[in-house]
Image 1 (tube, one colour):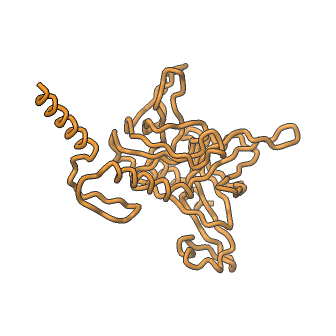
Image 2: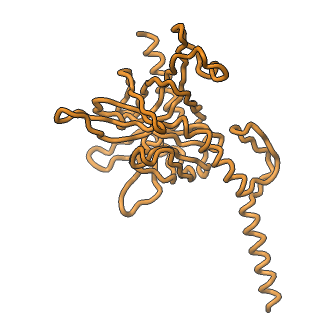
Image 3: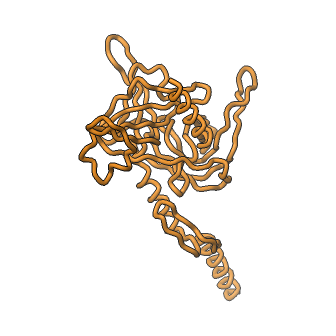
Length: 282
């Protein structure tokens, strides 16, 4: 009897260790480190990948502060998050070039111009919008391109500081169970650069409104990443560090846990493309 119990324990231990290590022998490419390797992916390897995503992405994620005007003063109405996706360098001679081309030598850079994507509800009804990163704060220019139905907005700001950008992935390639990381400022700037980790729960979710006319809403990625007020507008990232969604809302009640939603990256890319086309016409 003792011998049978011993074999059973060994079998369970072997199965458990196999589950932790994984069974894939396919070639894996980590785009952040730009290295490839063949073999099993360990828990330590997964942890390294998550840490790399957070480290490489957080500086391209800023806090958005929405200020309203009341009683002769300016009050903070709410906060959210935004993703920097474009960076231009304005040189001392007035010319403009891609910021990446100045990183090795920025002596002739006057300042940098940035464009960031966020949710429309983050900047809605604002008297003034500012972005914050670390100890710095910059005012958003009057140029705000927004669409309430899609709940997306593009904001522009300038800074003397160099900030990285994030790339968008292809949301059509997503699968349920894919690991994802959310970065943002839940509950305000005091918690900026907060990260949460989870999976894609459902690739294409269409939410039906409960009240009034039963209307199917926009397409969303459902995730179990922890999201809180302030995460809105922040990135949902794959383990290659690419934005595959813009976090926008969650189901919040006492009976529901782990139901957050992000606007797919392909929808965001089309929104940015439309913005560029309309800006070119002006």
